[in-house]
Amino acid sequence: MALNRITPQGRPGNYITYAVRRKPDVLVKTSCEVVGCPDYLRGWKTTIDESTPLGRQQANYIRKTSGRTFKEHKSGGLTVFIFDSKQRCFGDHRTIAETFSVLNGDWRRYGGTIRQHANGRDWAEDFGEHQQRVADQIERG
Image (cartoon, rainbow, N blue to C red; front, side):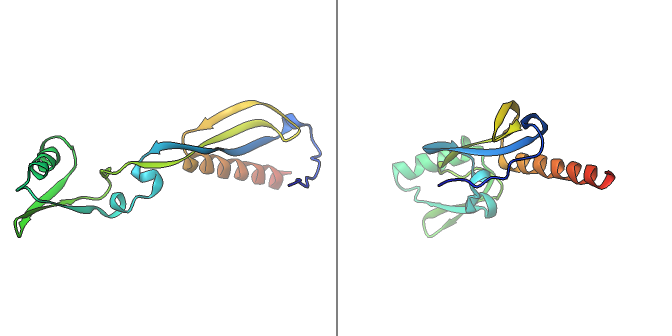
């Protein structure tokens, strides 16, 4: 697919490029918060049968090692653990690796990376602040 670009008036070094790049088919482990995990957002329940060796092992892990905040109650011979929201669930999440860059220059020539953001939220905030500075400069003339 060919890009149809307008040639900028200034030199490449007069511009800043905000770029999001992703490597196809490269999955990385990520946090519940990043992927919008419903258990992380709303909390969750885990029901365990402590009459089995595996159930006793799981309940022991939750109570003594997991580091999660929860309440528990017995229900029909089972133990129900109710976990608070805003904490990591027990699942593994994967996402496609992305880099959030601010580059010196434009598509004609890049003069290096100005900054690399850890996440899209910070990158978007930086981009918005930059756009506001440009708008303020245009308004001042």
